[in-house]
Every structure is written in C-alpha cells, then in structure tokens.
Length: 349
Image (cartoon, rainbow, N blue to C red; front, side, top):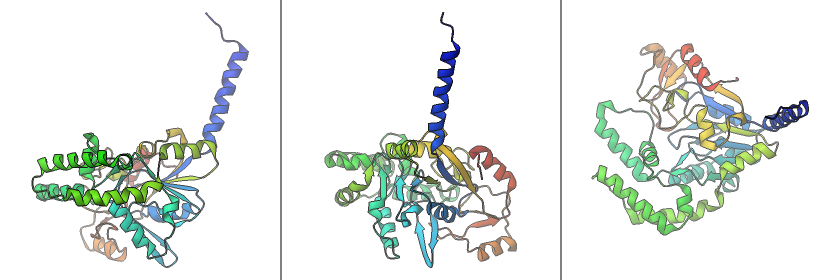
C-alpha cells in the first residue's frame, strides 16, 4: 500500500490550482428572463453586446421574439442573436436552437432594409441544430384546431419539430449539408410520418426540396461545429462570450407552468445543453425582470389584473407580443415567482 508523501500531495494541489486558474480564466455571461418573457432581455443583451466578442443563442426558435433599438431604428429578431447588429461580434446559433430557414432569411432581409449588412460573415450556425419545416408549423396549427378550447395558446410553433427530435426522426443542419439525396429521403420519410398522423396535411415535397437545395448552398459557409468553437474561445482566448436566453424560466418545459410552456429548456440548464459548454464555464447570470408582470397566452398568472389596472398597464406599456402581436396579459410584480426562478437559475444580478 502506497502512502502519499508531502511532495506528492503538494504536486496534486498544484495541479488542482493550475486547473482552477485555467477554468476561472474566461467564463460566459448569460442573460435569462425571470418571468414569462417580454422582460426586456433584448435591450440588456444589446448593451452588453457592445463589449462582447461572441454572442450566442442556445435555445428556442423563431417562436421567441425580441426587439432591439439602435438610434431611431427598431429591429425585431426571432432567430438571429442580438449581437448581429454589432460588426465586431461573432453571432452563434447553437445546437439547442430549432431553425426555420425561410424565417431566418426573411428576418435577415427585413433587417437589411433597416441597415443590417454583412451578417453572413458574422454568423455561425451549429451543424447539430434541428430544422423546422413549414409542415411542422402546419401540423402545429392542426393540433391547435383539434384541441380547441383546451389548446395551450402560447406563441409556440415548434412542438412538432421537438417531437420529431425526441422520436429520432428529426432532420438536422448536418443532414442538409451532407448528401442531398440522403436529405431528400429523410425529408420524404418525415412527410410520410406526419401525414399518417394528420391525413389532411398537404406538402409539395418537390417544391420544398428544391427550396432547401438552394438554402443548403446559401448557409454552407456559416455552418460549423459551434460546440468546439465556443469552448475553444472560452478555454484558449480572453474573448468575452455572451449568451442570450430565449423566452423565460416560467416557460421552461420542466420548471415553467406546465403544460402552458414552450418545448425547450429556457432556464440555465439549457445554456449548457444548447451550446455544449460545461457548467463551470458559466460566470455571471443576469435575470431580467419587468417592473410589472406580463404573459402571452393561457396558463396560471396569480397577480393578473383583469380590470382597469390591467388594461392601463397593457395600453401604457404597449404590451403586444413581438411574434404574435397579441395583447399581453398584465399584472403586478410577483416576488414569490422571482424567488422561485432565482433558486433555479442562481442569478448573480
């Protein structure tokens, strides 16, 4: 039996200290919503992005919306990270994001009319991210019609895609980047699976495949292994990494007001799984809180004001969803709720 000597213990402690120095050298800053969304995350991310080198999206899809104002120009982003408006920033769409390519290009084109340029050179997209197709959104509409009054009602359009992901029938960006015949076969199989469940679903397969063949070449220069990229930045450089959360903690599929939630983890855990970074590489976690509380769609809302006060908050606050343009429900600040989301996320500010 070997007995540890003072020298071996010292060497082990030195190794531990050296490793801690490396691990503590550079950490990502995270911005999360502490309520039901619409807290103003985009504004804070825009402020922090001015001094960031890399800005990442880690979860959600084009169901999440945030508004960024630069001077007199207002940008509505759904898939693009807010950092895309800063030319010194590299923007990253991580593996945890579900991407609707027509929506991405439509969003970029709309922002282009307001002055956004050269965004392709500053955007990296994970090869592991799942694709949302028009048929997924059509299926979501059919599901809502079937549920009728019992529908969830949140601005969520990616549930069928997440179901495909969980059942291993989903299609990822890397499939689109590979052999197109293989992608076409996967696409046809997915259409067949969805039409078996929803016979009324109509899909022009050849038209869709032709469209995605063009998209494949357009996005090819932006595709990379973002897991390796972000970890390399954190481990081997002093560049500042900023992560912007989508939606908010109370819409998290595990910790939110289930079933009135999104299909993703939009709390702190989603940062690790949505970007592929270890927990010890997360530094400050900023929880964004609105002075009063708002919510889009159905679900519990203990402090909601179904009276003149709620209407005043809605009108004066111009509370309309960025994505759906629906009126937001309004109520008082819920401190009990904030204690809960702080417990889950460990906000540092």
